[in-house]
Length: 357
Image (cartoon, rainbow, N blue to C red; front, side, top):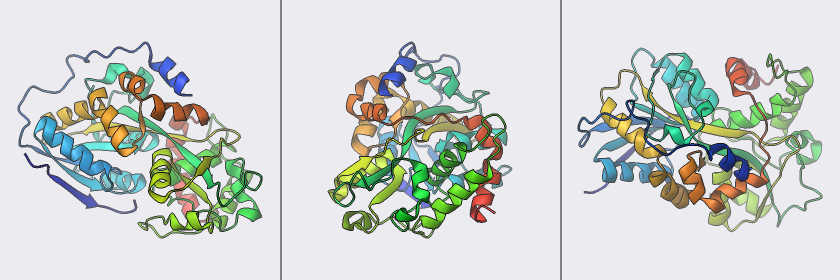
């Protein structure tokens, strides 16, 4: 059967510790909450995901058709844009599955009552803490947001050593900060603000806002939806990059770059992304089968190998992805309480868009 894929663009678009955390998890199915045995072949599901518009979307869609006999239609865009759309559509939901939104965004959607609780067949391979508070979504992958520089165009002595260094005058116009409507941009901004926040209340000091404002002012602005040009990194015009790990690895390969990741003082924010079933889906059986497929080790291992997607948190998959997962050990994870962040995220983003005033 020929693979079917359709994407609709919307808006902008310590490994050892991880294995230790997951080692006690079972790979057995979760039982009564697994996908319905109702026929799903021939179904079409709508998946809202930041992953739909690049190489990952066609791969996911092809496998869904091959393994399940279903067609996947992606509505793709930045994580922030998709979250806004989901909240706006709360009473007239168009999606069947939400895939690849970060933990904070998944919590926002869950809090609005948009998800139907569902326990995937692979849920027991991830820690209970990575499942939504009411079982309404499950986190499936994690990736660090990285600060890196082109070693052919910038020496280690001239490169930043931490995220807050980007506020220094010498880095003016040397990097682009991702759009704040994207998950990457939001996570990077949260990581900076969290350094200056009360970790109980989430209140950010004036110094924190001033630091983020200085970083944004130093950044070369890119219009929403505009694809980042790695030619500026290769030429040395903008030798510093802020992006997610898989995107950096792909860019290195595609542009013959040698990039050095900065293991920043205080760590770097990690985005843990999840998958959830949308309430009142007309294709619930197919949607559940898709979720079961996506998070399984059988899917995740070849998917990550083929597309450089984020490292899964499925213990069985991690064991088979030595090289990919080991990279995480070199990038210190910033300790961020995303539960606290979620309660402030909307206000923070509005303030950032107003220039931090």
